Length: 341
Image 1 (spheres, helix red, strand yellow):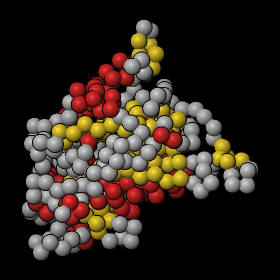
Image 2 (tube, helix red, strand yellow):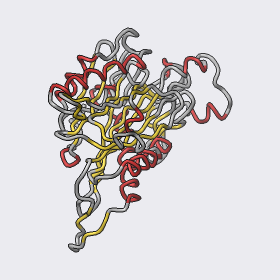
Image 3 (tube, helix red, strand yellow):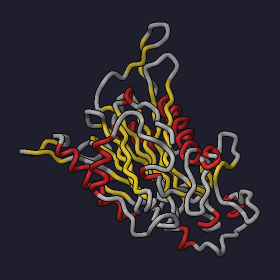
Image 4 (tube, helix red, strand yellow):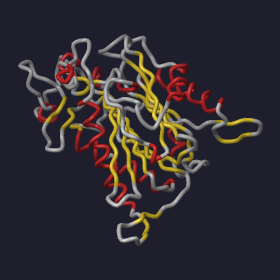
């Protein structure tokens, strides 16, 4: 398990809560000491979410949020967001309303109720409260932790032929300083995960142990038992957060979230399917300096296209790290198993 990239320059803190025996968990992404502005893009067609519209530029709050929760447990996991709200309220954070505060916490879930752990193991509000409290800009861990605890990838030939997914993070910086982009991903995909060359890193395995290549299986029309469409529709999703150190408005963040989705299409094949609930959030500080200090000492605005390109690269690496650092269990192998020997 890696310590996790330092997100202090982005004003972000990450906290996990993991039920190792039940193979589930959740991950809280919040501002270190301030709210965030957010945008969101829905790529899949089998999503599980809560308060997603709060991360929209046409919401009354114009995308102002207090935290994002990524959770296992499928739709059951959405209840855990109440714990993040409790922590925020206890620390005087949220939208001021009369004598108190109302924290805004969008959430998205992955299905991890099978094949690992126990079906009745679901993330709880108490777990979310603890994760929000222990959230930190570094040292939060990657791999089989938090919302990635029960994640698997490459499920086109059924759970017995899948491999372990997980949680990964990566940071990209513009040369000369001034712009930092981070990406956090929970990879529980129906498809295979590929490296930058296009080779499969983790995915569905054929009977002889070789990668079956889900894209080829689909191209042959060979989606027959041991997997059915009903089985496939219940067990997938990649959810991600990309973050910019440069303050962006709600429209720009919605565009950033959609642009970053290119990373999923490059690294996961197939993705965004009718059996995936893929969602990408984008966050930035609510306010601050939008200028980049150049090497020659001249200052100019940062082009949104530059931020989008960095976000795609960061999210690609985060997806890769999610499987590289995942440990196998319950007969499902993980790429980190070889590192432990």
